[in-house]
Amino acid sequence: VQLQASGGGLVQPGGSLRLSCAASGFTLERYAIGWFRQAPGKEREGIACTGATASSSTWHSDSVKGRFTVSRDNVKNTAYLQMNSLKFEDTAVYYCATDLAPNAHCPVFGGTFYYSAYDYWGQGTQVTVSS
Image (cartoon, rainbow, N blue to C red; front, side, top):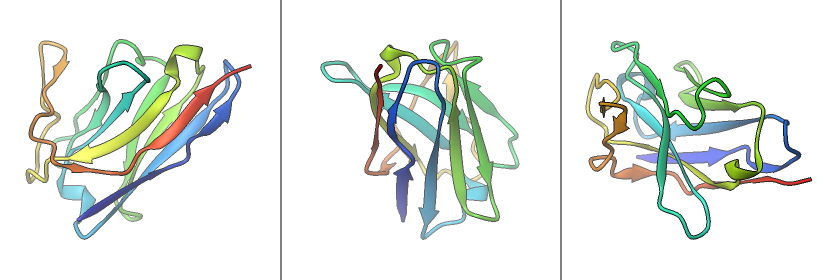
């Protein structure tokens, strides 16, 4: 089981990036994939989730709602995070992860993403928003 995040880079404020999370060793269609970020000196933050295809669920945190969009391409076994209108405060290392729970919804309750069971993590990709 492996997840590989890619697509990060340096972008100006207001710009866009698309992150990819390529899965190997399992069929992504059956599992929820979460996106997370961690800025220097800050705690890891769950920002988006796409549930297993059967659940048809997606979720975005308030900090990225309306700017970021999570999606998946089951044929390519890859999840994506489209990031638009990037801000300085979006600078962080971005990760994707899964709990490999079959046919799972995103574990979001009361607006909080409960990801303690997410044990399979990609290596992270750096996003830097700077002028």
